Structures are given as structure tokens and as C-alpha cells.
Length: 502
Image (cartoon, rainbow, N blue to C red; front, side):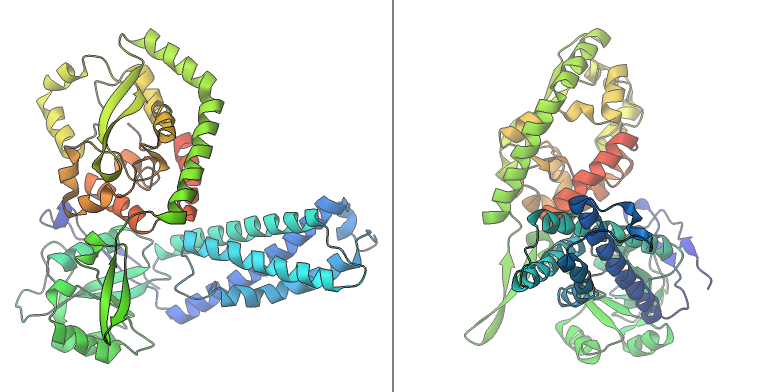
């Protein structure tokens, strides 16, 4: 298998960067996913057995000599029989869709499915225990077994997921794809899909909806042919994914493609959301008077979701403020000793539904920061473009350390307690920055800004402003409590490393 990643070096490309062309492994994708699925099953069963064993060892103080065939540790018969139920968990995992290709590598969606499946599996074991004469499953063992199994299986799947991501960079677990439509929407789709190496799609090129002479899309990928040649190109290049840029196609063309490939087992169809990406988090088909209509679901947290997120915010804010109070006092003293000026800095930002409030931070800049930046026109231009400076002369010595480890943001937990911010959310922005979100601004203000978020754990200040916007929109569209917990865990690692902060 020969794998390569080629960067088309053209400053005319969208966003000022090239787009990656990635070759794929010659090994059949079905074989690759089959091997991964088998590995996953072995991992799930092995780790589930280990979880029950650890729970029994913890609960009944069974010595490690259980691994010695000559010893006979004392353990109630029920718990021995319970181990026999673990293979049945595979059935529970299967009905939860945890071995379907569209669920695998699904991140928080996959992990939440594991959480539910193991809970059901443990419930089956408990019901079996109560049905047995003279058997009373210890609540402590049940709780420990559930906790151990959930943690171990999720960690196991996370590790395998990282392995697959590494293999994708070598050309494995990639599906060859074509984008139908070589207009601005098509180019934007290619850029977003291929910059992220873990997308699972290897875009080979574009299909033009009009007869053209130029076979190279400006600064991106080759235009491989016209829509009339689609069937031949799919067969020739073994395409597994067709992505339709809806703004480049007529309704008749879309229907023709769906008629040909809508029932195909070898080719998946994906329809870009186009305008709906701007105004919705999802579409729901409702039939009214025998007419199928799309109902637009607005991107905002409501009901139980908002209550759950608020409860998590308050719990974390109270805990962090209590635990870090001595540290914050030490930081305040260090700031006063390092440079003249106030300890805290207040920034006017926009919150939920466009409300304006003061976000608190520890001061990290010299008091005359504005005068410093005015004296450096080149830095002022960079600041206006990216809103960040890598070597900012305004930042103090203490401030540089605080920024590196995000300690300057500790006072924002007060904003969380005042319900102005959330612990996890999109970036907080000023009213001037709102214009840079262009058509996405109507979504940004439907959730409160966060202390941390997807962009902070995806490169922080090292990524472009446009990518930060896209990550904010991705968070809003895909919010779940599991995504928040994942971001919190990733934040811990990022803060300790201090990479990408300035």
C-alpha cells in the first residue's frame, strides 16, 4: 500500500491555504472495518470480564492468588455464574448499535451508548441474581462492577479510536469520496473535510455540474469530470462516498443521483446542509395533509438539557472557586508585585440572547497596553485580523505564565455562578467580533459562552480565527452532556501542557 498526502500549494485557495489530497489503502474497507470490529468485540469482552473480576476482588477481598490455579478463593457461586453473562452483553451492545460502522469512532455518542448498554447488562445480572434461591447480589459489588466496566470499556474504545486515527494518517480506514459541485460550497466542504485528518473521508476531487474546460479547481482538487460521467468515475475510482453540494445542483439532478445511488450498498450519499447549517441543529420530517414538510429545530438548549448543564456548571463553579481560593490569592499578590495596575481585568462581552456583561479575568497585560500596540502598526494589523498576538509585548511576565496554563480565567467561575457564562461553551466575544461570525452569529448567541470549549482543546490560539468559528458552531450543533465531559477531560491535559496559549 502506498500512502501519501499532497498539499496543493496555491495561495488562491479558499481561506489562503491548500487542501490535502490523500491516497487510501488498497485493502478493502470492509476488511479493515471487519478487523476493527473483531478487535473491538475481543476488547469489550475482555475488559468486561476484568471489570467483574476487579469488583469481586475489591468487594470480597479476594487475594491476587486467584490467578494461581492451585488456590481456591472463597467467592459466592452467584458471582462466578455472573461471569457467564458477559458474552450476552455483546447482544446488548449490538442492539445499542455499538458495532455499526456509523457508530464506531463516534466519540461522545459512542461512549454514551456504552454507558447505557453496560447499565442494561448489569441490570440483567441483578435480575438473574434475585431470581436465584438464596442469592442476594451485594449492592456494593453491582455498583463497583458497573463503574469498572463502564470506565474500562470506554477507555479501551478510546485507545482503539486513537489507533484508528493514526492509521488514517497512513491511508487506512478512509473512504474515497467525490464532491458533486465545484462551486464555493463544494470548495468549502473540501477544505473543512480534508484539513481534519480524522474525518475518515479521502476526497479525490470534484464532479462539475456544468461542462467546463478547466480540469483543476482553483487552488484545491482536480475536477474529475461532469455529472454525466459520474457512474463511470465512481466505478473507476472505487468511490465509497458521494457528497452533494446542494447549491450547485438542480432538484432534477439531486433526484437522479438519489435514484441511482440511494439504494446502493457500496456508495453512501451525503447531502450538505447548505443554508440549514446556518439556522438549524437538525431537521425533522413531519407529514401534514399527506405532504412531507421539514420542521426547523432551532439550536438552543431547553428543558432537561438546560437544567442538566446548569447543574453541572454550578457544581463545578462552587468546587473550583473553593479549591483554588488560596491559589487565586497568591496570583493576585504576584500580579501586584509584577506590574502596577488592577488585579482584575473586566471585558465587555456578549452572552446568551445578546446580553452584554463584564467577564472577569486576572490582568495579564501592562496597564498602558493600548499605547504599546499603537507604537507597533504591524502588530496592530495582526491583532485586528486574528484577535491574537503570539509574542504580545503588552503581556507581563506573570501574565505570560497565567495565560500558558489558563490561570487568568479562574475568576470567570464567578460569571458562571451569576449564570452569565457556562464552564463549557463557545468562545466569549465582543460586539465587534460578532460580525466575524457572519451568517453563524444567529446561532452563537443561543447558548452562553464558556470558559473552555472545543477550540481550546483543538489547538487554542494556534488555529485560525475561521477554524475557531467552525469549532464553535460544531459544538452548538452537537451539544450533549457527554461532549461537555469530554471537553473538560481534554481541557485538563491541554492546561497542564500549556501548548498553544499566548
